[in-house]
Image (tube, rainbow, N blue to C red):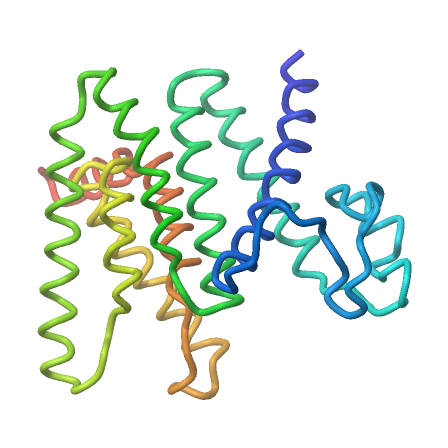
Amino acid sequence: MVAVYAIFIFLFGALFTSFFHVVAIRIPKGETLLGHSHCDHCEKKLNLLDVLPIIGFLVNRGKCNECGNKIGYKHLIYEIIGGLLFTVSFLIYGFSLDFYILIVLLSVLIIETIADLDQMIVIDRIWMIGLIPIVLIRVFDKDFWPYLLSSAILFLLLYLIAILAKAYFKKDALGGGDIKLYIFIGLFLKFPEGILSLFLASLFGLLYGIIFMKDKDKYLPLVPFISLSVYICYLYGTQMINWYLKLLGM
């Protein structure tokens, strides 16, 4: 039965991610979310088969039915990754509170990741909307104050780092959107795990920049690395910190 649930959750995760992609593209452009999906090339309305996550891409062989232009593989990649993230979360936590918390977290981070990759922005209204369910969950779970403290400290810490870095390097080292996003993230990770996520995001971003970016002045989207590190830290942050402290003999 778990396997059946996992399959359905993968499909729903891919479907939600497909919608999240639309949100991430349309909101920065001021477009409505109520309009029909259309081809980016010929503007023709897509039919039901075309918009089916993964299946539509494979059946149409990555092309628009109307004009024959290729559809970017990023659509397929986003949907597969989204489906896998939802499925892994379910396989670890089942239908527990942690699973539903992760649904909120993933929904916001997937949108913000796609927006940063495609539009080079963080959409403030998305994480602000995401604050509503997680605040309600923390309040009803009677575990609100430690997370509120984490949210405040992480934001203030990043804001201070950004000010000092700008004063030293004479340019922005952190985007304002990345800093504000940690107001949201702090309600999912307590302070030690939040600090670990910052370290991992910096490490992942640094490694990516060294290996793949020849032009060091090119824009490096940080939200994908932040999202990955936050997800890892939600799942295993406490164990990683305990393992490190044990190595230090503490």
